[in-house]
Amino acid sequence: MEKVITQPYDKIPDELQEKYYKNSPYNYCRLILPREEDRYEAASTSLQKWMEEEILLKDKEPSIYVYYQRFEVLGKKHTRKGFISAVKLHPFEEKVVLPHEKTHKGPKIDRLNMLRATDKNLEPGFMLYSDADGTTIDIFDEIAAREPDFEAEDEYGVHSRVWRLSEERAIEKVQEVLDGQQVVIADGHHRYETAVTHRDEMREKYPDHTEDHAFNWRMTYMVPVEDPGLVVLPGHRLLLKHDVSSDHLEQIREHFDATELEIGDAESYLEEHKDKISFVMYDGDKAVGISIPDLSSVEKFMDSDYSEDYRSLDVVILRDVIFEGIMGAKELAIDETIAYERWLDDAVKRVKEGDATVAFLVNATRPEQVLRTAKNGERMPEKSTDFYPKVNSGFTMMDIGPEEKLL
Image (tube, rainbow, N blue to C red; front, side, top):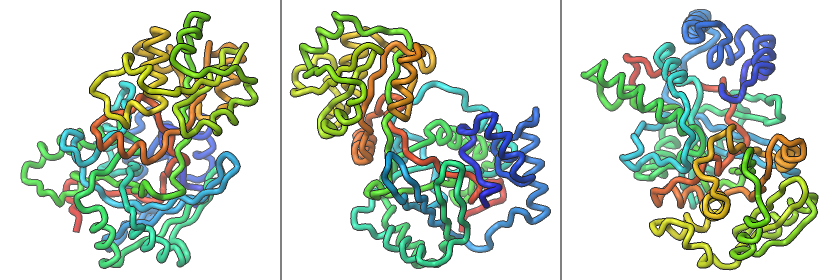
């Protein structure tokens, strides 16, 4: 399996694509990100050939797939526990599947063309649900006592195990926990919207469809928001053209507690202030730890319609108060005027090397904040969350062809 699984298609740079192609003639990259000129035809041809050769086999009975990922990040070991299943597609306005953050406008036609060419969900989405009693995890842990059906470690040391779960009563118990819930997209907002567009195309093309037709559903990785292994990393902000002037800093001090630091102390400052709204500003010469003692002092910068949950988010305060209110940095464009880094050291390095003018280092958004914000009908600023690790591609796919129905 280690020769054939991959990172998600949008996390495969050219050098990794080359490595995947060398790993195996059946590496999953050949389906999700072919290097042929007509990638859609190439994916469709490979898929058909692998099915005929029985490289890929379709399960004979309806199942869900328990999927655990064991990994280490920031010096701590974790295991994220979830499952892969079919989840019914709902446009956002139906308020069943909820987005949690704004997305940058980007092309969606590529993945739509791949859906059209293959009639398959080749990669799972990623959503959060609530299971305060731990009912689903208890079921999964019992299954996880068995030998996994699939097991592999990827290039980043993430160890994945997958178990097929076909017992009807166990699946029903999982369904009962999810019944009537609102679920929240953790990762893949654009791809979810693309799946809804494809569903609508198929409904128009096949007017006699029923709700059981598979194109009404999407293969999705589901994780309970209460899972201790659900790790969210920060999205440090890098301004590429805007400077923090002495006047800006003076205004920041009017509304925040600001303390000059050594940049090497930034991580400890953020850790000490993780229960407060806080961040560290670094412009290459100085680092300033910034925290807010009282939200009332910055309310004038924020929309009065914001919920209490929303106005208490670090990334909202940073955007509305400092970027837009004090610095006048509005409508920032990704990779033009703003960039994002997962690792603190990388963000600092980009400022030191002149690739960015200033970095704002932040604490990670907590999973429960994601859930509350989405259920309030609000969207966080872009790149407010970075769920780690990514879900490996290649363990499962789902047929959504016109003849396929869910049982």
